[in-house]
Image (cartoon, rainbow, N blue to C red; front, side, top):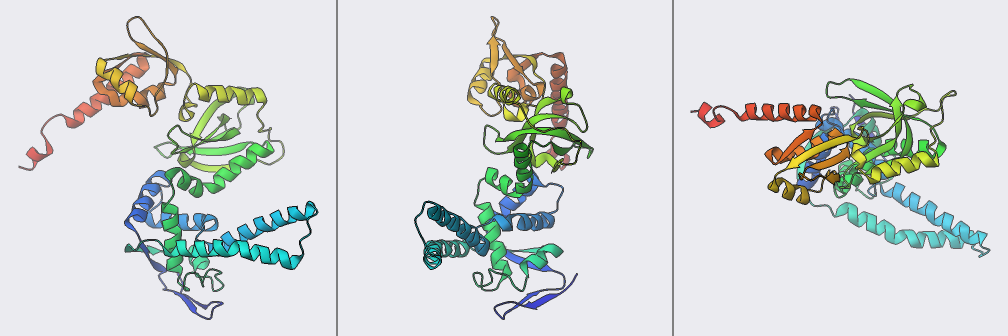
Length: 375
C-alpha cells in the first residue's frame, strides 16, 4: 500500500492515507441497495470488494462524472450541427461553438445541482483498491472543481445516483461490459462463450448464438437468450436457452479463425420468439414436457391471483386437473409455494422431488420449538 499525495490542477493537494481507507457519507437507502445488489450481482465479493467494483464500473457511465457526461453531450451536439451543414445550412465554427456552449450550460447546472442534492447519511468506511485509488486521487482529476476537490463527495454522488435507479437499470450498469459483448456478438454474427457456475462451484462453459438480452416478465433481471451448446459442441446439438446475466461467471466473444458463425437465421429467430410467447424468458433452458397438477379450491384461487412465473395450461381435463406443456423447473418454482393446495400428478420424477423437499421442510420444524430449548 502507498500514500498518494499529489498536487492537482487546481493547486490543491489530493491525499489518501497509507492504508487507502476511505470514508464516504451514504444515505441509508444507498447502503441498503449496496448490500442487496452485492447479494444479487456478486455474492462472491466482500462488501469492500463490491464497493470498489461498482465504483470502477459505474463511474464512466454516471451523470455524476460531470466532465465525461458533458463531453458526450458535446459530441452529440456537434454531430447534430454537422448534419445541419450537410443539409447546406451554413454554420461557421464560432457560431457552432457558441450554440454548443449555450446548450451545455443548463445541462452543466443540472448535473452540479443533482450531485449536491443527495441527502446526508452516515459515514461508511471502505478500503480503496489500488486501481480506484489511482482513479479517484488522480492529480489531474477533471471534476475536482465540481466536488470542491474532495473525492469522497464524488464517490457519494456516484453511489447515490446508482441507488436511485431501478434494480433492472442497476443490473445493466453493473454488467454493462457483458451486455456490450452480447450486443456486439449478435451484430457481428459471432459466437459468445459464456461460463456458468453451480452451487458447488463447478464451472461449465457454453457456446451461444445470441438472440438478444431480454427482461423477465417482472422486469427485474436481464436474460441472455439464444441457441446454445456445451463448449465446442456441434450446431446440431444446440437448444434454445436463456441465462440470467447476474448468474454468469464470464462472457466473451469468440473471434479466432476457424470458429463457426454465431448468426441466427430468420426461422431460428422466429422459433425463439414463439417459445418465449408460450412460456417465460427465464424458463427457456428446460425441455418441455407434460405436467399435470391437481388444485384444491383454494389452490385455484392462488393460481388465479399469483402471476409471477405462472405457467399457462394447455388444457383443464374433465376431472379439473391442469395440464401444462413447460419445463418441470417452472412447475417446481411456481407451485412449490402452494404447499398442500397443489398436488403434482405427473411426471413422477417431479412428484418425488416435491415429496422430498416437503419432507425436509417438515423435519426442520418437527420437534421442540427453539424457545423450549432455552428454558
